Length: 159
Image (cartoon, rainbow, N blue to C red; front, side):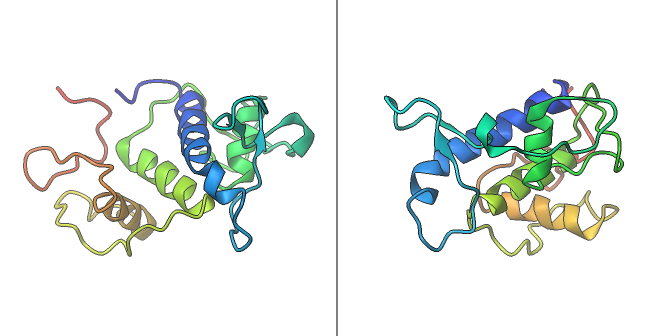
């Protein structure tokens, strides 16, 4: 399920969340969310978070020249594997997707829960920001437990 290219999943996630929330965010005067512009004015529900006119700078990754990756790095949705590598062909573990989703939600002004413990018993070895992200997604309905209280955060596929 998560064996797709990292770039495609990250871009899909960013665009999907931004497109779903863009009508609300683009009219709010108090939103700190990114400005989006209509990709096709004839269809109000089609938006682009990174139109060519936005002049998004290069993210500085040496292993990709994708402007889509530059876009999600610009908004803080991805930070890359290192400051100069993105590894676009790598698999994305669930914990990393949790970070993508919560960063995207935060960037679009979506309110998430506090990240309080949701009963997952297999995430204690992860950094605090990863645990928070995973716990924030449960109340939002963006998770699926596997065998009770286990997220199986490092797995890419179900058997």
